[in-house]
Image (cartoon, rainbow over all chains, first blue to last red):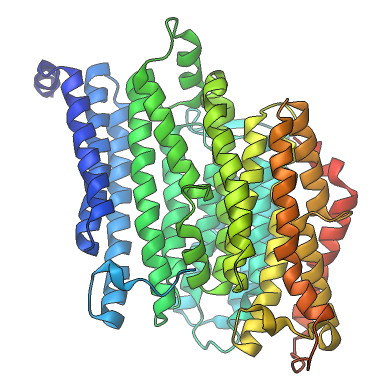
Amino acid sequence: MSGTLQNMQIIPLDYYIFFCSALFAIGVVGVLVKRNALVIFMSIELMLNSANLLLAAFSAYRNDPAGQIFVFFIMVVAAAEVAIGLALLVMIYRSTHTIDINVLNKLKW
Amino acid sequence: MKAIVALSILAVLVMFFGVRKKKVVLLPLIFVGLFVAMFLNIREWGTSVHYFNEMFIADNFSIAFSAILILIGILIFMFANIYYKGVERPLEDIYALILFAIIGGIVMASFGNLILFFVGLETLSISFYILAGSKKFDIASNEAAMKYFLTGSFATGFLLFGIALVYGASGSFNLEAINAYVVSAKEGVPMLFLTGMLLILIGMSFKIAAVPFHFWSPDVYTGSPTLITAFMTTAGKVASVAAFYRLISIAFVSLHTEVVTTLTVLSVATILVGNLSAVYQDNLKRMFAYSGVAQSGYILMALIVLGPKSAGILLFFVLSYVIATITAFAVLMLIREERGTFFIPAFRGLARNNPVEAFAMAIAMMSLAGIPPLAGFMAKYNLFVLTAEGGYTWLVVVAVVGSMISIYFYFKPIMASYFSEGEPQHKIESSINFKFNIILCTVLMIVLGFLPKLIINLL
């Protein structure tokens, strides 16, 4: 376990921050640009996982387990969220026979 | 803390009895459970206990906001059997999810650690996603749930990344420790921390539906089942506001000068856009969504002038908003049931045939608009005085202009029910039960208007 910690610390912390910010940005762009609900789910997962990775990196650098514990909470919640999201998607697919979110235009001002 | 335990047991029991098809015991059980939870909650008053290594803090602030959340539960369940009148199913899933959402809200009002904040927020949000889509075969409800889910989890992503950055800079999730870090940072806090704080603010703005992060709220609130909309607007707002206040008043209090600029822009934009958009709505449900957006703007004012009195005023403001909104939605629910529409003409001649309902609606609307001597007026008055004392006179001017605009659209249903020309619609039969609940809420609104100091001085 201590080996993992040292391996993580070989890479400078800045690299982790840049990498996670890039992942996060890709996720945000994916949510905003894509029209397929499944791809949007994946992009949201990417956003959450970039936060996970960042927390794990900070936690390794600070020798503080709290960050890694938070990662577990995020994983559990992300799993629950995806379960709900896929259930909603199934309901929508049943009534519209598509997963393109452009069909969701019944409610607008 | 004991309230959470009681509510969790209650929710599991509700699911159990639902599976056993014991429909008659469900609502009485829920009421008993909610009153027990309320009692357990209030009994902890004044004892400020810290649980689980500072994770959960039951101070007076959290107890007061938890009490409002449980009150929302009681009010919503009072109208539940009327809304779900013709349904044969025991509906245990919906009831249990409402209770779980309340638990999430209580956690959000009492966290002392960002981990618990996240868990509470997600308990609330995930329950809301399902509840929004609980009218399974209605495409509008499906659409509302999907939109809420996508925007909600998008906001969660921002919030989490912000929390990760704040943790990276400060090395702790504990609110007090984060504040201690900010105070001790000699050569200014690093960019990492400020970016994280900004991302957390964005995430929270999504949750309280502040402009420009409000675009989901009209669609979601229009598409969801009416009773659930009433629950989501009130419980979601109370919990998010409590969490926002806790974050800003504990973790970021030393950076308040930096936070204020962002919050002021949000507040002004929210008040103006919320009220101006509501003017153009003929669908009352949608109008309430925009009015909820505008009310978030007023609530942000209390966060801008953070002081010893702002928590109490926030509490009173939220309480008056909750009671008025639930009353209005209850009347709206009845009218939708009978006339099949949420549009203003459905209210034509309501005063002649259903004086009680029309009066309750009028009082609720006037309270939301801020007409003296109702609860809504006292809440707004105290909030504006607080803001002016804090040196933000121009912000008060904006808020007063916003309130003046809001009078126009809040008076639309009142005008339709009392002064409309033409043939009034037929009488709506409502049960004694419904009338009693409505009168109770109306009395509460009027009485609270005379006793604002009682609530404000609690905190």
